[in-house]
Image (cartoon, rainbow, N blue to C red):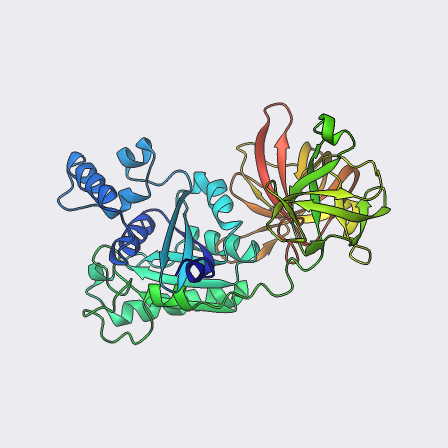
Length: 421
């Protein structure tokens, strides 16, 4: 039984959408109805609900873990929850709906395979719905489930659902979302979350649990190229390991095996892999996501920020880069500004050369006239780095194709960037 359990596929998904659309309540209902809440957790939920004056158990408290979140009834930080069913394992990222916490939504979406977007049936599609959907699509999430929530507050109306679904379909076409699904639900009452709704018999589709259990995640050609950004160099300096030099990090793409020929970047020097160690023992190969240390046959000078790849799989290199940025800072982005950037383990500085266009979150059109990029705007920019860096397009590898922008004076992260070309 244990072997079968370990072989279950893992699905990472986010819940996103506008404020008070019911994201936290949906997760609480999903966990509760799928019997994934421990008894002590349930007791704590009951006590917390009573203390806050709730008439019934508030399932949203299961993910709103910060005191400020519980007091204000909002989600501020990303809350991660793990659960499992007989067919699959899940990691849920419950992300904030408030516009000032967009950076946290980006963080949660950056590792997700699927997005569950919540829409309040009373309000329909809002600007924040569009913004979160655009960000998720920009981060190359290819599978979307749009949950039209609070259907109990619109008398479980099929016509309301169809109207919102039509609006979402038009948006999905603009965003080129290939796999959208639409479900009418009531997270509070459990309609179409784990069990089919008796109140909406006109809906013949799958429940939310059915969809996430059966979603076929297509990562296409992502992570095919061998990438190993070096995080640190291990030199134990012990009597038995005087000559040991291991390069530690996390495999960002492809597969590395003992004996493979490699190329060290930026030096372009070649060698072969001598050993791969996963902290406990030597292993014969390491795949994407594995944290390992690698030793080479030849004593090449490699340090933090360098990258180990394979011949014929050299990433792009340059100093002039075009990328999309989600801007998080209260001070507007302007050409000529200088920032520290971090791409994988590599750090350098850059100058913003140009703002090419800003996305209009109402029309989803590129605005080339009003280029002022303010907090929570999404724009295409061009930068010039102080040294050449190695990178991939984000759509090919979201690890080597992404970077963050840091203001040197305050050490504050001011933007997240996805390299387009």
